Image (cartoon, rainbow, N blue to C red; front, side, top):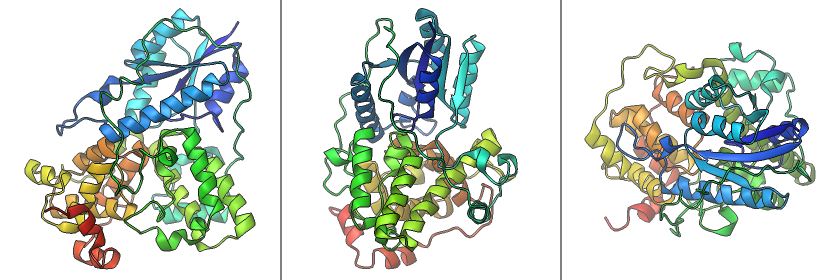
Length: 431
């Protein structure tokens, strides 16, 4: 009898899950596991928790939904708290597992976790599945990935590279293994934190249609592509307020409760019935950016996490007082302050404001970009290590395209995107 452990990481879904598919093919019995790493409960070097309340609530909803889906197939999601290197070898021994299958995450901590489990003598298979395009199907090896996104995009499009078709969710699973008795931690993750009820939120994750998990993700995808929003996405994507100005897929993509390949298939189906235009193309364009940051991690690895990034720049300056003012939306510049208040209140921020507040921190407040990246990690419901690190390096000029001049002029930006002051009034009211 072959017993395989499925270690769920940032792939919290049943549909188009290559990890789960591989485990099913190789096992007679199955155990589905999620490990909450206590490092995420600790404070960063900047003095705040790595996982704030918004991310925590959205993750708990996602885990509950995955557990419900597994229950319908005769399984449960076995939840525990600890370091993977401590939990998984002990668990593998207890259930006589022949191995572990998990997602390949090309970020330093996640790579280290797998290495430590292997060092403990446990076989671990890692499966790459978080990108839209398969890295082995690119017209170049990832080791020579173009260092400018536009070159990457044109090569991919010129060669006609397309994503593989998504896999359907399994209709059945091998029999479940009875795990050792250990307390479930899904509700403990909340620690008394309630979902956001702020009626100003552009991603109201406390409402049923925006909750964490595969069920809400697939429902939102169906709803989005059945309407006209995709047809005008490019015209609305720089909006600042409301649920309709952008696709809002990113929180579910970040937790892996929505597969990018399933999303792309839905996009192509939409184009076949309602027509393709510049706006539907732009959704593909944004998915390519998401892939690009993933492939950069495959290429550069831990070098992306040095203070200098991929450059030889000196350590960035930092001022704790100005950083605190930035975090709390009290830096003295109303457009960026409004964005930071929205982020703290809701765990979400438009892409336009993300670029603005990051530029403001780096170029005007002269603070360490790594502190800003850590604050985004703590706050954003759609935090994703690849895109977060990639974007902060890009804006700080320490990434693959280290040109200067990426400062966003807040006065000009507010005139362009908040000409009537409605956004600033919404988030700065009471001051």
